[in-house]
Length: 316
Ligand code: DGY
Image (cartoon, rainbow, N blue to C red):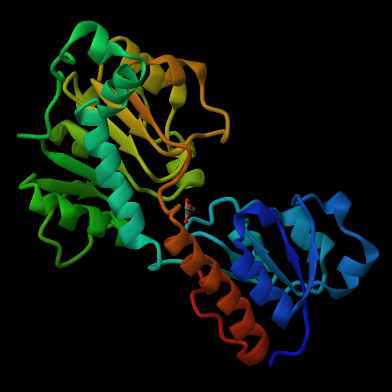
């Protein structure tokens, strides 16, 4: 059993009872609600050596905790942890890759089909009594048949999505900063080149400064009037005003969005658009997968404090 170490849990709502129970059995837990340095008490300053969190850790909080050794992020995306500042200060950052790959890929395919076949609108119509009142639902304007799909962000999840798309006989190509050797999918050196070549763009790129508003008016216009855009990565990657305009004026046909720039707030123009399928950031959100993510998050802390060996450190 590990020596009892204090851990601050931030945003505790994202941890299930199972994870919190494991932390309590292994560590002395100090919970705070927000990554706000003004909430750091003298006791925390003197004792906290690890953080379990769902993002949201800035440099100021790290600086307020001089004994901090490790930030264990619950989630594969760690764009809202200042990993550069952590690295500069010798603080380890871990995340939860792999355990959510298949779940997020499943959600992506579901969101794609829902968007293309307008199932979100058909279901609303049924619930609102449209079937009884008016008979058959209008035919969907779009179909999956004949589409070519571009993946922006060909990592583990991108690959799992691409493999699923093979079963639909849809051609796949991708854009990453660098080509991934050995993949059977076409590579485009620029995001614009990818958008020009496909009519369906799936964004699984990490958030952060390098991808901020990468999906802009120019990319959406390159996608074209039959275009469908799906975002399962991060909302910050999209210029949401440009997306809303493109959906309203027919620059693209439809969008399926699981993530937004200012969650939980969704821009009114996207909420009211008839051609958007919207989800509340649930890509990985099954009990099964969230439990696996919570386990990996806690296991990273335990391994660090017992053997100084993080299980899944984020890339340098
Ligand atoms: C992740 O793992 O980054 C997801 O967005 C959390 O669900």
